[in-house]
Length: 121
Image 1 (tube, one colour):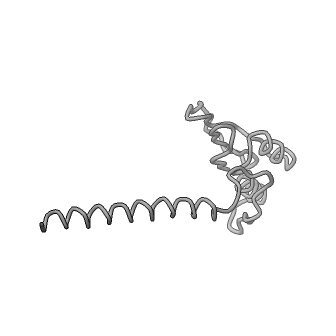
Image 2: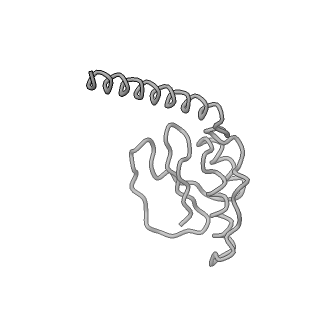
């Protein structure tokens, strides 16, 4: 008798946890804010006061701003700021890059056409 009661209590517990988990996913998904793809530059970026060069500081700012944008929108925005874009990887395929350092260039990584990493180095 004791084993049967323990099994019933265990099954009720598993059912309760499963229902709570599913409700948590539903509520969390409904409360999640923000779009996955940015349509405009990220407004939470700021100019680095410790940058060695003002051009590099501006490039780092633009790199932050374009992260999350589509490839086309990010490139268009960066070029409007006179910054060159170089695609470092696309969907997991990494490309050979030169090791020269330029203050006016951003390397981007793309996943499904979205800029996931923008690095000004």
